[in-house]
Image (tube, rainbow, N blue to C red; front, side, top):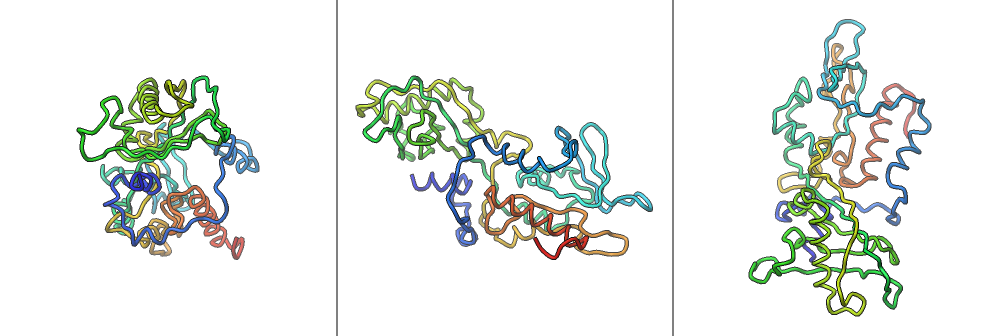
Length: 325
């Protein structure tokens, strides 16, 4: 159970690939964790509300970033290519794509960047770990009973047989056997959440809704067979799930320090390009932000947010707008 919980926290499918010395630099953010009632979109909408209408362009997929572009006098140094074959020129570009997308670009030897990223970037990208962690939300069918504490569904920490398949219950799906927790999103809620990581998360993404409902309902019925509250069976009606691993714009969830990598690789991820500046090569053409560029708060939303502030501040300093923010 402890192993599976740490797979979810770290995103490492196999904890043997996790560098524990490197992970020791990770810092918990101060304050309590909280759930945003209307989801992250409400945060984005609030931040974007101060921007002029039309400034944010959605649905435009970038296919290539040309930097050190030599288009002649007066031309901006960065050229963005879009999937609709349109282009855009810029003095500076902040790249926030996931580490998973960057890894795929290196594996496929794609022309995502032209010229290709320097070796100190590609080596850091290759060494760092990037895993899949998905949440699964399920709605209880017609909940009618509560326990003595007013809870409709208990907080379950589950332990499954892992090594001897002869002990596996034949009706419990294999993709459930590496989850460790299932619990209500708040104490009296009929919406239940569970976490999946690694191969099991990818398999869960590939299943249809009914397969998931049947699998979790069957498993929970066995776990709670001797409870007074659920003495008959546990049934779910609807689900909502993440699909971070199969989403081509993410290809995973968040970063971890893999064996062979270190916090120095996270610093290398944050290094702007070009690294060497000359009269013919304008500075800060490509900047990098996102959770994989924060040395101590990688894998988190607040880490990603803080790196956005960092890169915005870098540009403000470049244009001598501020000393610090």
